[in-house]
Amino acid sequence: MDHSEALSVNPTAGRAERRLSAIIERRLDRRGFIGGVSALAAATALGGCASGTAASRPARKSAAPGVAFEEIARGMDETHHVAADHIADVLIRWGDPLFNDSPAFDPYNQSAAAQRRQFGYNNDFIGLVPLSENRALMCVNHEYTTTTLMLPDVAATYPDSMTRERCDIELAAHGGTIVEIERTGETWRPVAGSRYNRRITADTTPMEMSGPAAGHPRLRTSEDATGRLVSGTMNNCAGGITPWGTYLMAEENFNGCFLGDLPEGHPEAANHARYGVPGGWYQWGRHYDRYDVSKEPHEPNRFGWVVEVDPMDPDSTPKKRTALGRFKHEGAESVVAPDGRLVVYMGDDQRFDYLYKFVSEGRVDTENRAANRDLLDAGTLYVAKFHDDGTLDWMPLVHGRGPLTDANGLDSQAEVLIETRRAADLLGATPMDRPEDVEPDPDTGRVWVMLTNNSRRTEDQVNTANPRAENLFGHIIQIDEPDGDFAATRSRWDFLVKCGDPDVAAIGATWNPLTSENGWFAAPDNCAVDPLGGLWIATDGNQRTGATDGLWAMETDGPARGTGRAFFRVPIGAELCGPRFTQDGETLFVAVQHPGDSDGATFENPGTRWPDFGPRTPPRPAVMAIRKRGGGRVGRA
Image 1 (cartoon, rainbow, N blue to C red):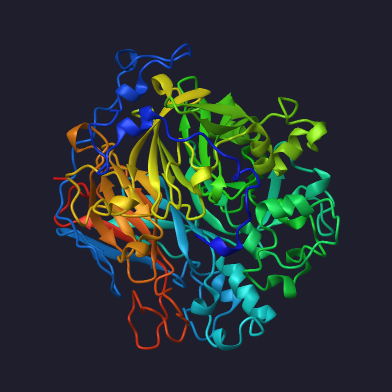
Image 2: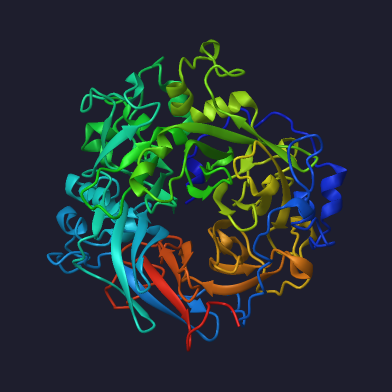
C-alpha cells in the first residue's frame, strides 16, 4: 500500500552514495540480458569470507521447469482475467459469514458488531496451515479500509461524516481472519462455523507485548501501565507462516491511524517524525484518545511489530514479537537455517528504508510444536548493507555495538528495537527503493527481494542496489546465502530484472529479450515460490504503465532467466496480493484488494462493482482460488 504523500523521510537518504560500479553495469544491457550472473555463479566464494563454491553446495532442487500457459493481454477493465485453461473462482469476499451466527452482509446497514463476525476488508497476505489433504486453515490479513469506497453516505462530507459508529466499523474491518477451507472435488469453499474460525481486529483483540521491548516505559499508556498489553493490530500487510504453523501478521503503515500533535519538545517527537506519525488517514482519534498522540504519545510505539498468532487455538492470545524490530513491516517470511535456527526476512516498505532479517537464538524443534512457542523472543536482528562487488553485509542491531549506545540516545536493546529505523540509520544501512516482500527459497538458498519503486530518488542518491534515479517502476534483487546458510552475515546479490517498459530506453528496464509485450510489468510487490521452485510476482502500481496490476510468472534460471509471463490481472483500481500455492501446486490463492479504487471513486460511484456486479452492490475485496481446467499444477504443462 502506497500512501506516498503522507510518509516520513529517512534523514540519511540525501547523502551521496557511490555510483553503480563497472561490474554491475556489465551485468545488464538495456534489455537486461547478456547472460547475467547465473544463480550458480552468484554463489561462488566471497573472497576471504566463509562461503562455498557452487560445486560445494549441498544437493538442492534443480532449476524449476519453465511455466506453460498462454499469456493474457495487458489491459484495464472492470473484471479479472486469468490465463487460458485456468479457472478463477471467488472463495470469500468482504462481508461473507464466518460463524453460524454471522449476519447477512448488508453494505447499506453496516455495523462493527456485524463486521466482527464477517470476513474483513482489503485482504492482503494469504497463509495456509494444512489440516489434511483437502482441508486447511487460511490466514488472511486485512490491511486497511478505503473509507469512502467502503462506507455509504460518507464521501460528500468527509471527514465530518466519520461518526464514532463508522470509525468502529473501520476498526472491526482491520486485522485478520482465520477461516477453515475445504476442497470438494476441484472446488474450495470456506467452512462457516468451523471451530477454528476467528476474526482479529484493530480494537478488540487482546495482545501481549513480548521480547526485549516488552514493559519498557515507552510502551506504557494510561490504559496499560505495564507496557505489556495492547488491544488489536492494524495495517497488516504481508506476513508469514512459521515452520510450526503459526501465523505472522506484519504491521505496516500504522502511522496513518493517528491524529494530533505532540507538545513542542516532546521526547517522542523525533521518533514519531521518523515513522511519519501522525499520518491522519483515519478519524479514529476524534473519538478515541488512544489514536490521538497529543493525549497518548506512547501509543504509536505499540504498533509496527510482527504479531504471532496460533491459528490452531482460537482462544490463544496473539503476541507482538518485539525482537523482530519496529518498522513498517511488509512481510515476515521464514526459513530454517542448516543449523536449525529460524531466519525471518522482512522489508521496511518505505522509500529509502531498509532490508532486514532476524535470526533466532534457539533452534526449531520439529518434533515438539510447543517448544517453539517463544522462539521469536530471542535472537539477533540484522540490517543489510549492499556493496559494489556483489556482496552484502548483514549488520547486527545490538545495543552496545558500534554507534548503538547511550551516547546516541539508545539506552538499551529495547530502545534499539523501538527505534529500529534510527538504529539502522546509525549503522549506515543501504537505503532501498521500498523493500516489500522478501521470500526465501529453502531449496536453493536464494532470497527474492521486491523493490517496488522510488520516484523521489535523485541522481546523487543512486546506490549500487538501487541504480536508477526517479525509479518509477521498481526492480527485483536475488540474494544468494552461502551454502544455503540463511543465518550467514555475508551474502551475495545480483539483479533479476529492473522493471518497466523495455522498449523505452530512458527507463533503463532490463528484461530477457524473450519477454513479450505482455510479460513485462512495474512495481513488484508480493511474490511466491511454487512447489517446483518457480517465482511468481504480484504488482502494486502497474497502472502507471496503462494496465492493471496482476500476477506474472518469472523465469530465474538458464537462457530464459529474466523472462516474465502474464498470468492474471485484476479489475480496475485493484491490487493483487498474497499469492499462495497449495502444497500440490494445483490451487493458487490470490487476494484482490481495493477493487474499484480508481480516481474519484466512491461507494456510490466505484470504478467497478466487481465481483458481484449488482446495480447497487459496492466492490468487495475478495480471495480467489485459481486452478487448471481438468486438474494439474497451476501454470504448468
